[in-house]
Length: 403
Image (cartoon, rainbow, N blue to C red; front, side, top):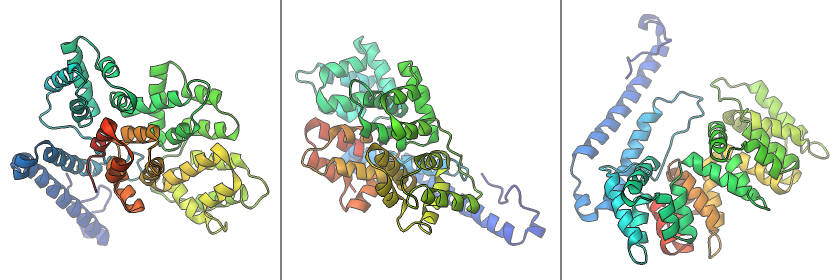
């Protein structure tokens, strides 16, 4: 795991403090790894008395703990400056997985008079995408019918939409939602902004590839055909994925130049040089932009978000604000989107479904945390109050627990 020395450090006799720090860091990492491994061993080998009373619910909690331990171990291998982000899912692979058994249970549930939605929900919302794929394969073998076709025939409304969404991978789902946002006469700009402006470079590159595979069209061409003006220019600049990779070298001169350029292109002048804003916000790395926005305050009497509200309107304003909010804290952005979608008595189910399905295997655990911190109530409680029926049960299962 670690030899106790950094690869580039000089011999111990000459390294002095540098080696001491290196050894300390390695020891700390080693201790963390040991603790995690011990937790893993304990959880996988020790019978838990709670399981005898709470059954599947307790097993699900153990699975969540195991996922977090596994996630931490995985993060230790990430290099500084990488765009790969740690994952904090609420839906994780279930242990003792038997796809044949799950497929048979779903087959019985669908054939039951009136449909046993609860069984379908319990299985599909508590399995990872890879496990759902295996279930679909076994279901087709048993029932001689595709699971997606069977679900369409058995379910309806928002529950059907959610379950069909779960039968896609995260990137397939994003690509499908983008296609749906540009389908027909009107464009769903709200969905388009959320999906393009909240995804990072790697995610957008993968979405473009899958979009082409699924629909035999280029995402850029579809966006260009459905949007116009500066709004189109910004979205196209983002999906071209020309954003700089994060660096562990901080370029203070470039930070200052970009902050000043944003100010001079907006608040300082009459009218807005939108092209400069688009260039900087679509090409600079996220850590760099975070520092630019801090530096920006030394030039402008307004912060970046206030400046955006003063300088541009409509879809362009929403897009720039989404970018800045995601640069600052992407999980808080999604938490706020969920909160806004459930402010009224009846939820905006399209928005809620899209976020819950697309983030449940990515970072929904952290979104839950940000939701509770920002809004002083749990996401679980909010969903319970603003949704109902089997759709509510499915959402609560994806949520993974109360906070």
